[in-house]
Length: 413
Image (cartoon, rainbow, N blue to C red; front, side):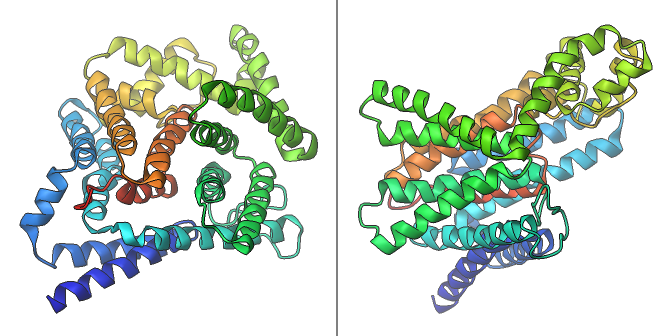
């Protein structure tokens, strides 16, 4: 009994440590995950662990998603890249099922506190780089101050942090005045930080988070929720557009790229027009999507295999756009990638993860788990249209970690 209590305390210390390290360091987070894994595998009680894993529908869906990737190796030609993709899916086979068995409801506030402290550190350093108080380091530049990860990952982290603190402000009736003031200040500075960096998908995720919070707060009145949303979102957009040169530039760039995409494709036989597409992030995403849909059209049932997307994309691209000689290993869209690789079965296995998240979130016995349990999958479902966010280390680990305590099958539930 004493040994088991000691192991449980060790787990909780490691989980809080992981929550803190997750936004700051890949190596530190991976080492912590490794220690958790070793402790879990050698701590016994395997029957109860297995029952907990198989008794959680999200855990089962996660494992199935992994093994669909393994199954896709059977018809792949590029086994090397296929094994690389399977390796990237290890979070769904091991990390989520393991974490689901060791997270505890009574420690959720400590997990979130560790995460928010780390985000505060990251935000502070981001501002110090932006104001040129300190020299840029790692990923940060004065124009795009995201120190510990690229802006593609940083802004989704900010969006999650803003949602968590905003939820505390709106729904915690026992919050003290000094805590309330600090939380409001945090939300304001985080929101400003969101729009001085270049992560457009994270900015969209932030707007989605605002809409979700509005509907959750005014859940008794759909009309009021819609009215406040229609008033708030354009206002936030216009303030950001007129006050942030980075956001202004990125919006105008996206608009210009979108308008110029079709024209560039029509004249893509010329090297100049092809070059315009290659230099356009929006144009490239549209081109990636167009070519990937051609792959899906030819292989709708089982896809091209876990490892064959890069070679198949190159073949299709050379066939339809021979002058645009820029290939990719994924189409910057999680749905299209999985559909192209693994067909309809793969897409269903991916969507089943989000289905069970929303279902379990709605049935949660606590307000926080119910609200955030719905918000987390909705926010990821939106941003995965613009990139493969369940392939990147930072965002995948964030998704898995938050899921591990939101959708745990608690004994008391």
